Structures are given as structure tokens and as C-alpha cells.
Length: 499
Image (tube, rainbow, N blue to C red; front, side, top):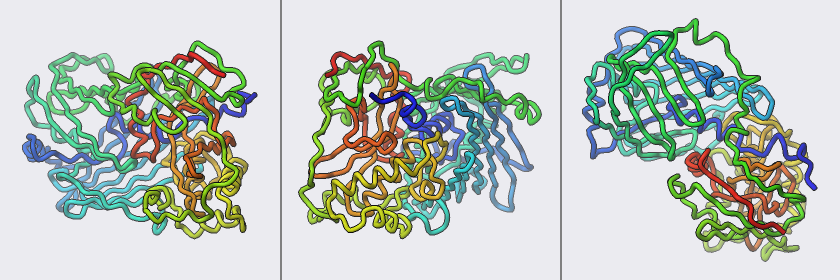
């Protein structure tokens, strides 16, 4: 039987979900570019002119507890603006206090159209940098230190805007009830583009610091979650409200920096988990699990990832059968990909630096002269399990960073293992879903390796194949993982049978 302590501190998406959570209310580095078919051009031309340095402070609350602050500063340059944003949050992650800090520096023109940016994410011993530069109708993204990742070139469908500058387009503009503005949101930390419509939903009174404000209520949806903003008659953002009780409130510098809680705040992971009434015993010994899945219909989430391989999904019923691990794969290393079908699962990605000399050398050292993909895959998984300290980390997971720090939660384990597998020529991918721990299913990340068929592997739990309580929602990196946000606090699970 798996002891709870073995599964306790590393079974969640960790930093990835926290980052996506912050993105939901528009305060982590992002670019917005307007569609050609809507009134966006008019909005951009109404951008508020900044003639002197301006700073805006916001307090960040999780439900009623203050956990951080943000400071956004706009500085006029010769012909451009410099936008600097600093966000600090103290979080409770499975009883462990953690501080996350993101610092954004971006140069925009006087219409607040982005030219270049750099974001630094820091959480204790882990640091990660994302930078980008707009070139014509593309944006070039780089992650990590110079030379560590292959630049990603992404086509833009319109002029990009930094998220911190969006509020400027409402300043000096007379809003009207029922008016709407369409955007395409681009986030470099996940490399995703999403259409986004902000609608003016009428006037409301907002009370801040015992003062009543007459405000416009602006509403939008992102990844199936509701976001609400309140702006005053001058276009200043007074309040922002996102999912799970995350709220930002306008403040001055003195108030924003006061009374930061965190150690005794709500546990973020427990808040995002899915409770079940039934209890599972001896999870590792189970070969079959049948569940009823609810909450998908109105979430906007594509359930296609639930059906395939070891999982069968029909209607609301999900059945999971544990795979049989082959003794020998039908190929020897490296995988002979003559058709090119496995190319996406063999090549490096921006945080999966499988061609980096450091990763290739480590993978070769662990594998030795063994050419059996099954035994090599197990060796690589066991090395990650034994050598990476299991600790919640708030950062964009990067294989090279994990090798340096030897610390991380499930996402760090998964990103390093997939890089090592690809480095020796085993097709591999990241999986995102949930795993069972004491009457709850927690968001989790693991891997699959192609060994004649796709076989699940969990380097944080040292399981190959993974137990049947691993519910796969989809596979892919942060770009795909962002889709699970639509399920948080909506998904329901009911265990019907286990054996």
C-alpha cells in the first residue's frame, strides 16, 4: 500500500497551475493582439498618453486573506514607454510557505504596442527567465539563459500589447453599457493564443477603504473561467476578481506592502483538488478503475484526451486499465523513426532541452551500453525519482533548471524525464491529469514512453506503469496544460468500481 507521506508533497501541477492561475487575472507577462475583424484598431488609437512616470499598486487576496501585491510602473522614454511590473505572492503549498516573485520589463510604443519584453520568475532556489522581441508579424521567444533553448518563432495576427498596458486603453474613453472589445491573448509562459472578449456589463458601486466608487463592470472569460474587472470613470482599475477567490484591489504603496499573510492562508493545492466520497485501498495493486465524470459539459474542455490507450471514456463513464509492461520493445535504441510519426516526441522543445550536451551526457551515463528501451526507460525514471528532491516549486518547469537545482514537484520530474528519454531516442511525452490521495484527486503531471505502445511512467512516485488512479486529461507541455484551467472547481468524480 502506498503511504500517504510518499505521495503527499509532489503530486500536483505545482508551479504550472500557480502561474496559469495568475495569468487568469491578467497580471503575469502576456501580450494581447487585436483581431482584424473587430473594433480593436479604434481602441488602440485611444491609448492614454503618459507624460510622466506613473505607478499603480494592487493588493492580492486569496478569499479574504492578503497574500501579496503587484506594482506596475509606466515610464515615458524618448519615443516609447517602459513598463515595469513587480508581483510578490506568499502561498501555502501543502503546508509549506513559498514566495513567488515575477518581474516584468517591457518596451512599448506610444500606442502601447509591444516591442520587447523580459520576465524573471523567482521562487527560492529556482529562477527562470522568458524574453521576447517582436519582429514584423512574429514574436521571437527565448527561455532560460542565453544559448540554453532554441528560440521559438510565433506568428502574430495583429499588433501585440503588454498586459500591463491594457488598462491604459480604457483611460480617457467614455465606456457604454453593452459595449464589447475583442482581443487575442498571447501568453509566452505557455505559448498559447486565446480569443478574449471584454464586455461592459453596466455600472456598479465599488467600496474600497470605506470609500464608494461609481465604476464600470467589465466581464470576460478565459479558459472557461469568469474574470471581472471594475474601472472608475477615468479608466483606473479598482478591482479584479478571478477564480478560486483570487482578487486584486487597488491600493497605495504603503497599504500594498503591509500585512502580507501566506503561511496560514488556504492551501492552494487542496482548494483546486477534486473530492470523492469513496475510498480507494491498496491503489498500487488495482488493475481496473471505473468512474463517473461530471462537470465537462459546460466547461469548454475537450474530453478527447480521456479516451485512448489505457483509458476508455463514453458518455460520463471512464474506465482505466493498468497496462502490461513489455519485457522488450519492438525496437532497439534509438527509435528508428523512418515515417516521421514520432518526430514530435523525439525532438527538443523550449523547456525540454533534450539536445543539450549536459542532458545528453547525463542520459548516456545513466543508460550505459544498454539498448533495450524498456530497461533504459526504467533506469532513467529511477534516477529522476532518487535524485530530484520532492518539493513544491513555483516556476516554469525546465529540464536544464531541474538538473541544476535537483528540486521540484511533479512537473519538474516530468519535464526532466521526458528530456532524458528523448535524449536516448525513446519517444516520450508529458501527461496532465489527476491522481488519488486520501479521498481526493489532485492535479498531477507524469509521462508516457512509446515502448511498442504508450506506457505510463511516474517519476515522482517511481511507478512504471502508473497506477490506475492516474486519470489522464491530456498530453503536452504548458501550451496544452493551460486547457485544464477550465475544469478547476467544476470537475466532479464518483468512483463506481475498482478491482
